[in-house]
Amino acid sequence: MNNRRRYRRVPGPFDARRVDLLPVPLRIYDISEGGCLIQSHQEQPLGQRFWLEIELPVEGWLRLEAQVLYNLDGWFAVAFVEMPDAVRAPLARAIAALA
Image (cartoon, one colour):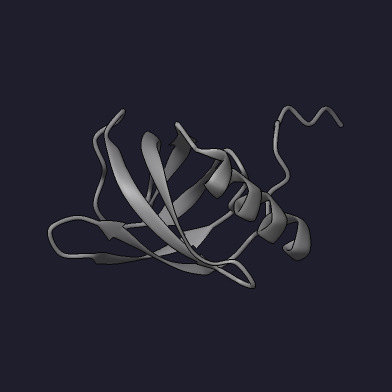
């Protein structure tokens, strides 16, 4: 089987929140170092960027900038963008520990 994915993924779920004027609680699934799938009943504008905080076992809360890639029925996918090493390293450790 030809797997075109660049990063290892773990299924979740994980607690998260969209950082806005008021934090919006979210559920994260299928997370990798490159992005994740977010459960949502509202379609998100493609290309929109926003701040996302995700609670990961052992590492705690991480704050990442996310960009909407696509919408699916009840879900949307994001890519993590402009991630500093101070966030990339704990995210990689959490994913490795969960895999």
